Image 1 (tube, rainbow, N blue to C red):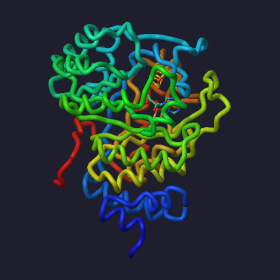
Image 2 (tube, helix red, strand yellow):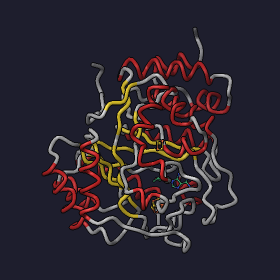
Image 3 (cartoon, protein in one colour):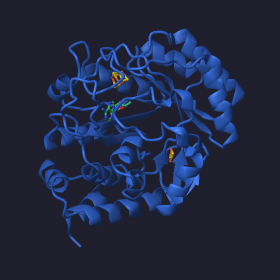
Image 4 (cartoon, rainbow, N blue to C red):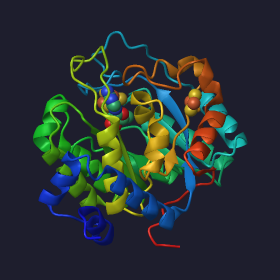
Length: 346
Ligand code: 5AD
Ligand code: SF4
Ligand code: FES
């Protein structure tokens, strides 16, 4: 075979024009999916890594135009977990077998570096065998260094869009694409395993923007790449903008798997939200990570980044079992170990 997909699989790269053809057409989808699945199985087998996600605060000082947690959203319900609540989520997660905890939250000034470091150090001491992942937004290099010294190993910060003009349409003036990228390079230099990523189908996004995202990722070479569809949130300035599609998200996931065979690629909650089988399809398209929510059920609905988020009701106490069945039904195996990146083939 001499197709674009075959070329992407073999060379891990394509020209901009070739990428545009792949991104804009649905005719390669099945071939892309199969190639992506073959590459993921070669590198990671049928393993799907589980990460225990703890949403520590729904307060945020930022005003990203797409996000329900934006400071300007006066309808948002706010909460923050106490140190004790966070530690008991970890305890529960550890008992369930999780060996990675992800502490995610809005940019909440209450969580000073001191408080973050104290919590990280405590988790590090109690669970020396676990990876600690932070996802707490843009900070100074010094702050990132302090968290790292306290025991954090990984950091997730999506670049959102690599194109400065597009970035400016999605964010208020006090945020910049440049600072975002600076954060990611700082994190990498400090020694974190770094996750970046972007939304698919975000307002005003063009194919060229998506290609720029892939080019930026080629430069950054992150360990993890998180993508999910943009989903409308009713209390934001983008309330009338259309959500992204599962179809394009899956296509981008497969392209990412072929360009970055080593990468940890989550099949996201957002993908599960826009399609009932979204997460299963995401795994089949090349994803190899899922992040079940460990936050207390009582706060889950308040972490309303976008509308109709799944796993926020009563059923969510059972996410673990539910997800494991979903992983198996998609043809894979749930793994709870640290699941470090495999840059080199085993
Ligand atoms: N739809 C989908 N994803 C969103 N995010 C923020 N708002 C939305 C939305 N409306 C994503 C961003 C952010 C992550 C925490 O959630 O990419 O990095
Ligand atoms: Fe805050 Fe993150 Fe939402 Fe932006 S995307 S408003 S930084 S929680
Ligand atoms: Fe959360 Fe199914 S994974 S309820």
